[in-house]
Length: 390
Ligand SMILES: Cc1ncc(COP(=O)(O)O)c(C=O)c1O
Image (cartoon, rainbow, N blue to C red; front, top):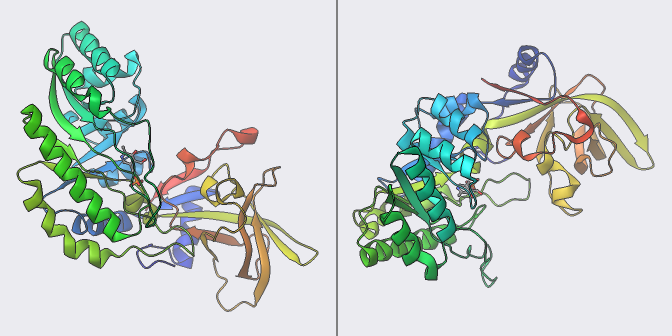
């Protein structure tokens, strides 16, 4: 278990289930969110603002808990935007991102006064038209396209569809300058789940230099330069731990390199991930051949990250324990499976687990990011998983 993951005790877990009224339930720890924000701040360039990305976990209780701790929010839809604004965030501290906003989404964002990423010449024209139509000004943040760096040495960077191509940059800036939107910022997001601190540090430096070069070339006076986040969340027993000490010791170097740029880092998983646990009740157990099946009421419709669909066979497992299971005999070859009629609905494969019986609670730790909102909740039309903050 990674030491940054905050896990409820057995007694807390039982009370949380009573409070929720049923399982499955995601329980997010307020103090763990606070700790995570402090951890990623220390591992970010000094003076950089910290934005939380609702895509990792848009639950309003989580967003409200984070609002006083972070400097702004990255949102991807009008609904996420409303959640961020309802948490009391000033509109200019909300950044509406995404590669293709519809006319209605552009209007919602501009009417609310939030900053918007602009990801192509056509999107720039759309924002300009919509702002003129509404009679409002706007804060444009140009996302620059960049291939995401390789996660492992020697692998190729990953090209992607996001942001403005270098050859379109002058056109986008021209459209915005002739429009009611200002060129308020640049966004240079470069990917997720990097556990090698040297990749994180080198990429931050590279994108900061690119932002400064771009600002100088076009004479931009910027209010925001988002240099991504990228720090991994070790979900699985095999995932490498994040070297927080290395990131923190190097964090002070960047402000000097960034000059006077108003840097912001965007994080999702490393903030919400460690703070969430999923509690699920054992409904049945059975032995078939040499396998012990422990069948629980949470499925991949609640926690897609655990399923075979994402992980494949040789996958490493989410961290799971039996609440009250300490001291019980251990059973080998346990497969924790969900309630869905799908062979993919396997939440842990071939693990050792203390003996579990119907009525027992299982606790999956460190699953606060990309949980319910990232899972196929519509599958089999089952009840939605509950969520609470404690
Ligand atoms: C633009 C942007 N910002 C922030 C994030 C959050 O990233 P993470 O969960 O890796 O911290 C993402 C993830 O896809 C993203 O695309």
